[in-house]
Image (cartoon, rainbow, N blue to C red; front, side):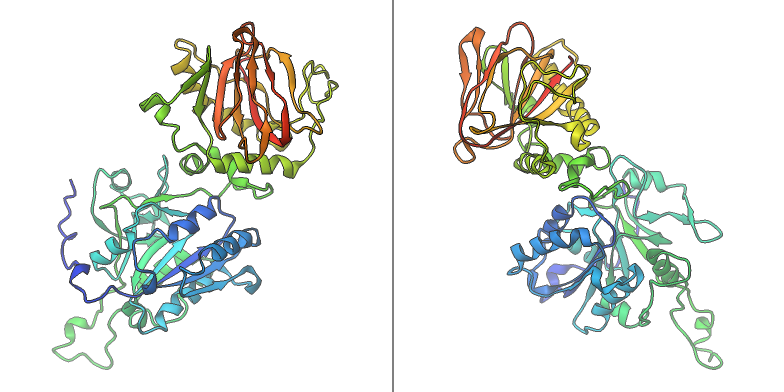
Length: 483
């Protein structure tokens, strides 16, 4: 139920216009932000003609220069009008936002200014049109942090001008009440009519106020703006305007699903591919980027194969995860060399050694165990019915097979209740040979698929060996679960 009486008032039907309005999109990358590559790609999925869009992109982070460069090289043909402002300009966030807004204000053909922060994942490609059709001076789409009460607006202000929770805030963010809401504060993403910038908001500075962050400055300026100013004494006709209305109403809409806010607070950029560590803070974006697109078909369509008795085979990692994990390991670079003496182990000795790097060595162990509990445990329960895994695994590692260093692995049992073994690259393109043979069943799997995992019992029944890699380099990720 919307219960919204104003949602359909004064709306704009874009289909009646001779041509769609022109638009400037101001993009702000103000801190290290996970999933930035995906954010940039999403800009091009917005359902709006490219020739009607100008981009103003401010990046304040040296770390992200490489991501923007890659994006530009890939898409420069589609991006017709772009202004980049980089970290070398040394702008504060407020100065950058003033500059972006002014680029629309100074262009008489700019009908709308859409401000978008890099921590907003817009999943609705019609966002721009839906906001324009509401025909408000300033309007924002509601976005919330997945599974949290954190959103891009405040329902009310405290007496000193800071956050206060309004009584209907929870209902609004949960979608129990839908509509168009007049709010005192919004941030991260909003649309402003160009004409409003050129009339009511002519001043160049709206974002730099004493001791206030940029968004609070903007909202305070807009709230307290005097819209009509009369000179001299009021005439009888203008008397009703003597006490002018204050401020421009800012609206937020939750009439549609627009997307979500990303958490940036624990983002550590010291890794080569830092997004791999985001499984706790941004689980939806992590899944979208790193889990195989067919993973859910394991449950909905029984997408599991059994090439050997009790050896199950199913999709788990996206190509991106496979590539990033291999690159992360090579970036770390300290491979064990396949020797039996191994100081990383409690006893200091490995009976059947591989040339590997442990997840603990790159600081990925907690995230990896969470992955096992979130994504492997449900598969285990489906395939070995009645067995509830504890999701414990002491040994989690990436193995590297090459003809020069270690080409194969002799027959052995694993110290696990069950083992997962994920192929991280492709036979035929990256290596020749390889695979796994299970002796008890005289059964070999010689063409592993990139991103697919084997799952098999570790002890007693499944004596197995790694078949020789004859050319190139083969990588696999292995976990001994429930030792």
